[in-house]
Length: 300
Length: 264
Image 1 (cartoon, rainbow over the protein chains, first blue to last red):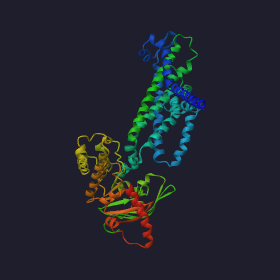
Image 2: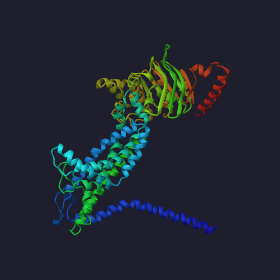
Image 3: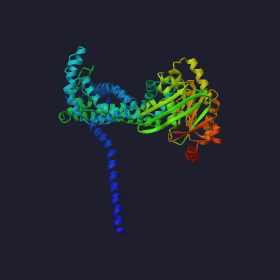
Image 4: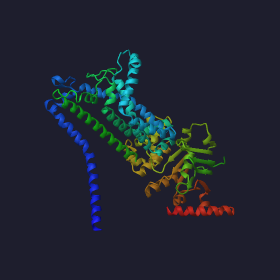
């Protein structure tokens, strides 16, 4: 009997150890990733200052010039534009779903959103090439008197917007659901119309949540690689308009890693690009989480 | 409508999805008196009150039938703008829900919405209503602060001031003291007694003692039905005579009910 009991204790001990180890691995992963990237990129950072690398658009790897500015600006363009497209759509949809639509509409929307979120990004990329690229080059660009192949910043942003919509929408629906009915009743009972209530009370109350939904959207958009790479053109030049080709940071890494590594410092430069990406995404995620937590505290 | 009657509810039925929440409710609420709707939790008293304000409109699954007359206007079947109807009624909910803005704007909200935006006018009205809710002295130096910084008791008085500011004829209060400490509760009760000179007050509560303290008129609800109603004195001290059957039925429910309230 005694032996059996020891065995049982021992076993539950071992299981506990495994659980803790698994947990530790997950907790440590981001740090390991970050340190790995840093160690790899330190070679380039020792030679040139971060400032110099970030604010130079001179990208000539053969002569050892690695200026990230055009890539960083491409990334900013694509991210900002996609958010500009996806943001208002998500906001209006979320308001309609939570305040105007019947319950069953929301019940249908949830699986639709999940499906949209689960589609592999390469499919969005193919869809972009087949539909959005010709649409831009044949119909949209001519309106502005511009001739383009269709592989532009705008194309990338549209594809990206479609991809981040499910994520932003999901959070926004939750944010709007958290607003207590009594608050809306209070506003209505003071003589406000439904739209006034939404505009003056609901959106104001949900504001931190809305911002954090955008923040999570940004961090997704900033890092999205394949779909954008397929439609954005990939030209290492600072873009000056939405109908020009761009070359975002993730596309730079995905296109070149493994191919150009015979050039000295090239892999270090790509690792630095990855590190920058990593930090930006981390910061946006972190800020959004803080805002979500704060808005939960306020609504409670 | 008879004289002295402010709200008349006739054959009101309310379904929430498949639940029959209010069953053939007939209620008479006298003018410029405190009418207490009494009943255990979940008996439909809050729902009845929200129907008077048509706040049930915002829930798509709610179906209402019957009539509610306020000043001879059937508000359930009216062509009139519902926002104007609602302004005739100030609402005080169980927990205070200050609007997400500063103290000043909380009170100014209803005034601005009805088109009164002049700063000097607003300043005067806001001082007036905050004083009326006994809050002015506590907040006069911090009007630009967020309303959520106030204590719960102060927030509830702010909600009262906010409701009074739209100049209602009726005050609907849904267990307005349930989240408050005894002193704040007493302050609100005393305020109600004071306010009934000018306003018709409908107060929902499950606290029998509170009803006894301030009620002029009592409506008793149980499981979605009105069991008994009448002047407070008659209900609490001289239950009226009724046919044998009804007495038996009503008494058993009422006793159950009283026991429930006292336990709470």
